[in-house]
Image 1 (cartoon, rainbow, N blue to C red):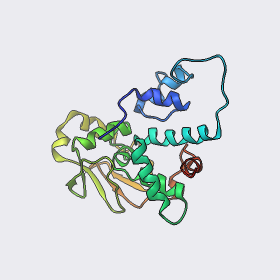
Image 2: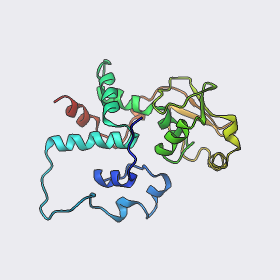
Image 3: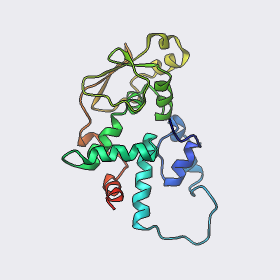
Image 4: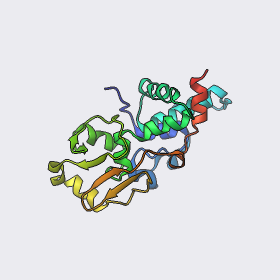
Length: 208
C-alpha cells in the first residue's frame, strides 16, 4: 500500500499553510509553518507568477495531503463523486470525510490522521463489533466505531481516554466518553464540510 513517508511539516510548507498533520505540534511554536514561512527547496531571487493550473494543482495537493491520500486513490474518489448527481466537490469531501482513519481522528481517538491511520492498520478498532484494519473503509450512517478490548489495556489508549471529547466537535458524529465508542449519526452534509479546501478548483483541475 503506497503512502507518503517523508516529513509531514514539509507538506505544510509546500502549500504555504497549516494542514494540521502533526497533532498538538501544529498548535505550538514548534510548527514548521510558523518558524519557516518559505517553501522547501532552493530559493530563487525571482518570484514566478503561479499559473491558473498551478493554483488548481496546489488546491488538489492540499486536499490529498490533508487526508493522506495519494494521486491514484484521490482520482478514484473524484471519479466516484463525479458520477453522483449534484455538487461534485461536496460529494468528494464527503467521501474523504467518511474514511475510517478520518473518522477516528474526528472522534478524538487520535491526535492526527496519520496516527489514526497507523492504529487502524494495526487492528485497534472495531466497526459494528467487527475488526476493520482498512483506513480507506467508508463508514455509513448508524455505524459504531469502538476500540478492541485488548487495546484498552495499552498505555496510549489510557492517554486518549483521559482526553476523550476534547476534539469531537463534528455534528455528524457522536462520542460516548464512558465506553469510548463513536457513532455516525448521519452522513456529513454541506454545512459540515466547511474546510480550507476550495473544491471548485479541484473540479476545474480534473475537468481540463
